[in-house]
Length: 401
Image 1 (cartoon, rainbow, N blue to C red):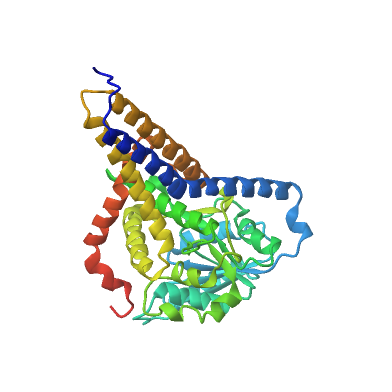
Image 2: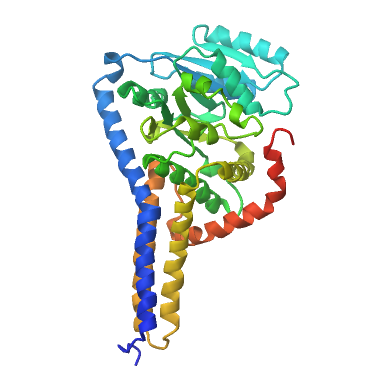
């Protein structure tokens, strides 16, 4: 019979495993994504209400120093500053740390400060700075020069979406005196990816953001985004800057963030107007690989719980697929188990697609939805291949390399 009701017990066990694994995968992997959706919607509603009530005029606004690590051309930096200086937050200064040499930066500083004499300070990374992280050095110089109680680190190749960006990043500090760190978000411009693996790279980058933001909303902060990161200035000096990771090129937005955050003092900003876009131009593919390699390296120094949770979720996704396929194929030509397995797989895949797309939409990112089930299954394999391909390059993450 095509639909024989006499199904071996092992097939029912396989179908039961598929259902149980699907429930666990949704709970462990996808419920944090729904937490992102709820938080983003709540923050957006609050932001719209504050706009209507002229929120800034009724509160004391602490001064924020926007520390900009600049390595773009002068005309691009000028354009960037023109967007930054029209932020509607009333109490801020901008500290630009330029990659250029002393002579170039002195001339640039004179031109730029004449445009913004009250709010802009320009300095440079000293020439001959070797065997150290130039990014950490730039941030250290900028934070030491800052006069605000709060510093916000970013880079000059970020696209600022709105004049409300700075207000959004500062609102958690204003509303809650216990807030000491605000994790903003930036993402690579999906339109600048290229090649046959373009959409997988967009998915991979977006899922990485979803994972650390979801973990932070659960109280397990292990990463931030140095292109859009705000914290109280005193935390930097209490931690003695980046002294704990002085031997590493990176760690300024994950190892350092892990040290200064806890369950109470950290907020995540998820409103659309507070999310920056990174413009790396033709280097976008390479920067995706660089960021991925960098975070895989520093993950070894971070708490294991968030990564174990992600790994368990991936394992459950594979278990759903494997158990359902086994239950469908073994009893052929009896199609009843295959029909049940198909229903389980469809329900699970539709659920993961809907939840992921909701979270990705809140983060201003998107992926062709039909490819998502395959991308989820491939990602742990792709990560392993990537790690093996770059294992010889791990030494470049040390400043003494």
